[in-house]
Image (cartoon, rainbow, N blue to C red; front, side, top):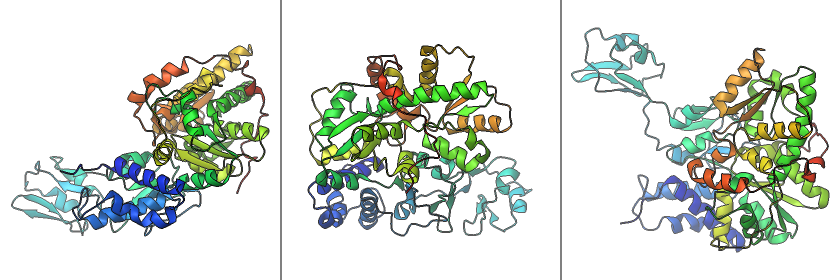
Length: 488
């Protein structure tokens, strides 16, 4: 009996096939063959029919090639939007939002029927019945039922969205409003049918590697633990070089520089009585920009570690092509929105793994390159890591101000803190905002769950030096206003 593939397996198979053909420079001819190679025969494996399955894979191939899904519907579409719905996959979501359960007692008062202004509820011998075609999803029947026999089951994608950017259209297809979306990727993880995904830059990167000898990789510190307990950053660097990259830099280097500059900025703001937020997490910055506009001036003007690392590379090689590799889809949005001239491409750990598979890189062993950043720079990958690094710099510089910091672990905590700041009731002086619970280790496109990767990450983090000021890279960048950026 054939193994039934889950959504992650299908996504990874598509990425691997796409990467393989891109490296062989035959993707244009082979793209249409991928759905038939992944789903052979005529028996469906995970949907109603094999034809729908192949269409879903076909749209995933488009995303893996940097193209948007066909037939996707948008209320608004910003050019920097990276999270998208695959309509043919979303169409199979079986949720009927309002459902009468067996708790219905077929009572005589018929409060549910009386509460419905649309005539969608009728009485049967077995109890109340809701006509899906007439129901307008107002929810009054749920509130009126004395037995709580009517349940409201919200679509997982919509329920998971922290900013209400997802709506369901008349055809029961999810629609993402990019003017509201912060590209956090929570909906990607929470869609049970894999109908929401991020658009990829992977084939652009592969094509560049095939034609340019000056491509640099920048790897996020959360990568340790993603490829197994023995895969340190030093080992992973060598694997990445085998893909054709000229060199590989740790983004934790940029994090050391950010900690140095952000500590100076925080100290100055503290003296002036001004509250401040971190600027490292782009989803957190998007949240402030789109929903707490009057707090934009409180965002740290220090650039993110990704951009800092790109600038460090370009300081040495002005002709460099830079590729960020991390666990975050919002980094694609950050690069496209503001820094595309400095961070040329962004790919995820999933896409990196597909590139390894597509080029048959042996991941069983390898030489270990040296590590460069501090344990605090690496610590940016964890919730609380930014704050710990900033406080460490203040300590090393002998600044003993009583600065209070609030670590926000996930968007819900971020929203509460921002509301307090907006109302002038925030006791702390600095908000460290991480949109993902557990920080980047809990990112939406990690290869491993936090409980699998955290132990390995912690092991390698402890082996780093701990003095940020002695790490000279932290002093190389001038403080850069986040608004003074290279836009497209």
